[in-house]
Image (cartoon, rainbow, N blue to C red):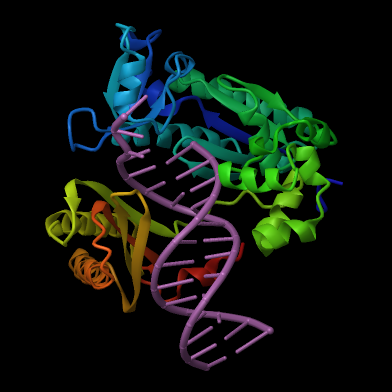
Length: 373
DNA sequence: AACAAGGGTTTAG
DNA sequence: TCATCTAAACCCTTGTT
């Protein structure tokens, strides 16, 4: 009913309020206080957004993505609140050690973000689910004893249900969805709780009277593909039924981007030096990954926060920051020119560079051909 | 019909 | 109220093979 192949045992691991918890481990003084991790844009004092916060802060109303100034206002009367800037290098180092713990415990491993990973332990537990539960418990314990970090885990037959399990019980959760329990777990939940269903999708579903995952599971797939397109429609229908055959597999990186908030909104390409440094930053990432790219693009966020992009495929792959910069500069020049011509005169708030279409430094074969197994 | 290029949207963490 | 940064998946249009 749920899977067509052999039954699997999948564990989803999610490190709790990761950035904030890293800071608590580094400086135990702040434990027990509201901790808010901020991305400062550098425009003005306190301009920027909240990246994440510990549960003490969340329970006071702090949400990820919220303006820092708003968060400070909420915690105005809370004298022990701690606001810290993101220290991504530190979190990355912690993450790498934790991921190693998870990786060695699993036959198949897939990291999906800095603080999340899947394990496929099917081959390690012929006994069925009890074996998977044991492995999950030991990984969770090991992460805590070695790094002093709490995590939440979800155990189920596939990645989707593993993810649904983890998300249902945080922080420090341990949730099992046994084979056959999927429909019971999903059916009463509001459709917005289904992984992949955000505010836009939720409101489109509301328009056709679909409010719960159970209702979505009964919705004609054809109707869904009409509204959401072929792929998404089918996926929504399958996910609402707890069906997910996607393998646990490490995926090669497909794109790299760097974007910054400009000191002041700009109506012309007067931020070349910023773009140059982003370009060289991308070069160093390419070098350390031993990759070249065949596509270069720019990202532009207007004053009204609309995203725009331009991109260009290269004749031959490159690793050069100089070339990435030159192409980006062209694309920005072209963007502002079109902008002026159309009489729009949109100003940019944020600007960035994106590269993609990677191939190995040595191997002339494009990455897409080595997708198999 | 299948594929590439280019641009936009949505989601997630 | 003010509104970061990174990455993936998908959608659509247009043009070529």
